[in-house]
Image 1: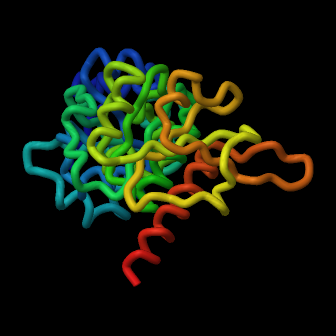
Image 2 (image 1 turned 180 degrees about the horizontal axis):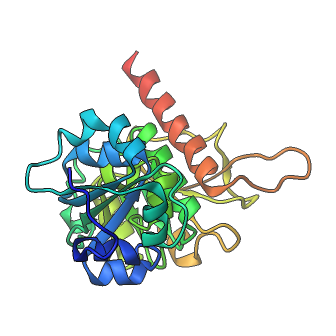
Length: 268
């Protein structure tokens, strides 16, 4: 472990972690928090450029940092210096910088085997992006496809909210839209559009396929007419009382859980 001073140029990239665009220009993303950084290191899907820890975090994560490649620097600085360096309070005293993956589109996915995918259109709130990834990973989605105007899964808050699912679960950009939905359907994955429309089929009554792509849109606007037109099935989650809808991450979880139940029934 290295004990640099605040003026050490090796720490320069940490001075920009609050500026997401600056990190993107450098080809980097930042992971924050002990569990998130532990999962980032354990997965080995992204090259970790460096780790920055407070003394308390370094002690707690000794077993984790032993798994870091020898060429990857692990810096330890006092908590107060870390806060000064990054410009805000890092509560858990743990950050890591990693290389952003090369952009990929849906054509890079093998669509012949997944039981289900999650497809997003226009979801740009980082809490919702993170929540959707966390639920997708927990409920067995093979990958996430990002349609137009979606937020960056490697935005610091999205990674943290996802509990590192955005650095573990494969994701790609849709490319041409809504043509990507045609590509997904042609691979044998019917598209299930989640919508609160009264004309949609209740999720409790719908006959669900064994394989599917679950399509969700931004809260408020929902899915565009173009995306809805590409769906094989429109489903809604019936509401009670004054509520008109669920949070998009929760709604996606309900539908993905229903697909998992359908698959479990088929295996009996």
